[in-house]
Amino acid sequence: MGLIGYGFAIDPSNGLHGIPCIWKLIFHHECLGCGLSRAGAYLVRGNIEQAMTTNWLIFPVVLLIMFELMISLIYKLKLSVR
Image (cartoon, rainbow, N blue to C red; front, side):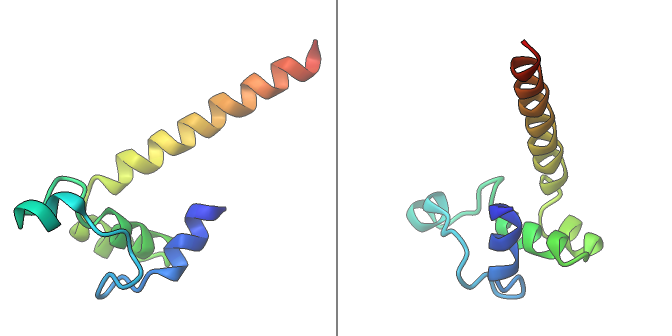
């Protein structure tokens, strides 16, 4: 829920209120993760095409988060059954 709220708090058109990239600040070049916050903000707003254009790595990140949440839920359910 926090990530969804964060996605709505960011202005994806200019990246205001997003997390600054330390790599870009130091070396003046974008890293592979640059644009993930903006891509997430576009994705939360339902603009899948713009999210893909901004940074395609948002989709593997979302899949990993969903996988982690499923594993966590399964683990909690197993503990509650015992």
